[in-house]
Amino acid sequence: MRNEYEKQLENLNVELIRMGALCEKVIAGTTKALFSGDAKYTSKSHAVEEEIDKSEHNIEHICMSLLLKQQPVASDFRFVSAALKLISDLERIGDQCADIADMIRFTTSYDLKDFKDLEEMSGAAKDMLSNAVEAYVKKDKDLAITVIQADDKVDALFDSVKKRLIKEIGKKAEDGEFYIDIIMIAKYYERIGDHATNVAEWVYYSITGEHI
Amino acid sequence: MRNEYEKQLENLNVELIRMGALCEKVIAGTTKALFSGDAKYTSKSHAVEEEIDKSEHNIEHICMSLLLKQQPVASDFRFVSAALKLISDLERIGDQCADIADMIRFTTSYDLKDFKDLEEMSGAAKDMLSNAVEAYVKKDKDLAITVIQADDKVDALFDSVKKRLIKEIGKKAEDGEFYIDIIMIAKYYERIGDHATNVAEWVYYSITGEHI
Image (cartoon, rainbow over all chains, first blue to last red; front, top):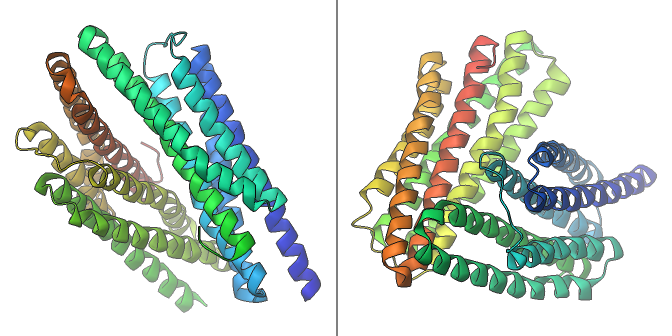
């Protein structure tokens, strides 16, 4: 029975790493679609987002089975319950990317050469998620803390993009809709940062047993 | 065995109606928080959103159990698989409301007396969801079609709010951040309309066996 239990825990670990990798993939692909101005990449975002949803359901199923049938010991219980929580945030990251992809798809192609701030912001959000996944894999609580702290940077970048584009709208109201789209896309990256922070907080909890 | 099966199907129906009612509640409460300018209502939005998440997991569990153990007949299979899909959209409606609540909470109180268009839009999105739930309860495919058609109205209202506020930013750039917040809130209501449309499409499928 314990053997089956160990196997299920290991399976949970593998599936979580896989789901995290899918989230990294969807952010990278969506960001590529955004900055390449090539809408064909957006269909991939939706395909990966669906894989993420399936992965979430699969992991939920593993967690439920562990909790109901195996009655895990305290540290494993923490690991399983943290997994159940953090997959909701990973799933939301998939949603945010699908939303960005929708915005790109239904709009004339963007030329984003002059949006280095947005590029920096999307990169920072992606790094947060990558580090949160790595913190999980390596059970590295310091890296989890680094992720949580990095959220301030993403928030500041969002604020700066927003303020800059509001000024642009003031100057060129005829391009207002384009700038609004970009602000909304930036908002989605800001939310991705929030969800990566939540993931890191659950990783911290699963390692230490304490809420940060 | 069939008796247990009927009981599980009835239980699924009851839980879906309950989850739909929670979504109506979270939209109504969040909209009240928005237009009353009283941030205390926003904590309720988060509480209801958590109930929605729990309800989703509960329904997933019922559906899985039905699919795995009971091998439902074709029309029931459609009903169960449609349920599995539409709860994702209901859950996203909860998320959108929580996002709106976050925006209200972290911003100085809005005075939205002059935003009749946003009020109309939020009302239209709420009606879409209420009708989608009613179409489900009454197995009314015509009402499901009405919901799907209503999405154009919500999209048009969003477009109109957005265009009006872009002009306002052009005139009063110093209020730009406030107007951007309102556009983002309007965008969330537009997404609620999209999710209500998806729900209606699944309801139509579960009744007719055809995708609209």
